[in-house]
Image (cartoon, rainbow, N blue to C red; front, side, top):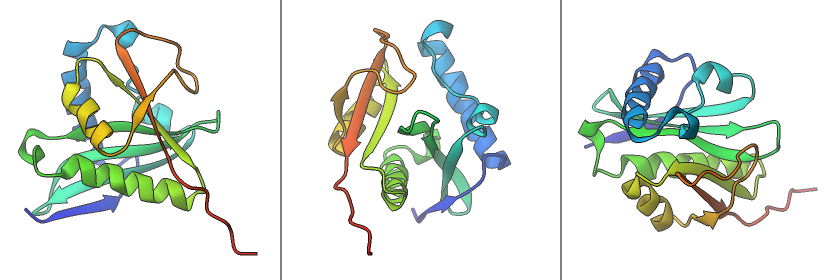
Length: 158
């Protein structure tokens, strides 16, 4: 499988299709009060950097880097379509977000996922994310898992 990770815009219809699949999947796992999926139109109100994973020209996954007003860099809307699972798509997407967030001089990248997604939690742990408490605008939810990965600060050339 040849995999390509490309930056896109929030209004890309391929992203909308993948996010709709993600929302359908998560709506079964979590009640409304514990589903923190941010709609794409709301993400547009802050800095965002969506990425698409393509294999053989077909979209197989997505992930977004979201920079909220609270100064927190967060991973949002990670999804891999069934055809792309088990092939390193999610890892490649996360690594693209990590590379980008470091170019923006952030030293930490946060995420929130749910307790009913052990595969996602395991992947994040494998990629170096550790457990943390609620961050940004989140408040404690027993169905949520909060994670963070830190990066070394870069020294700007003077």
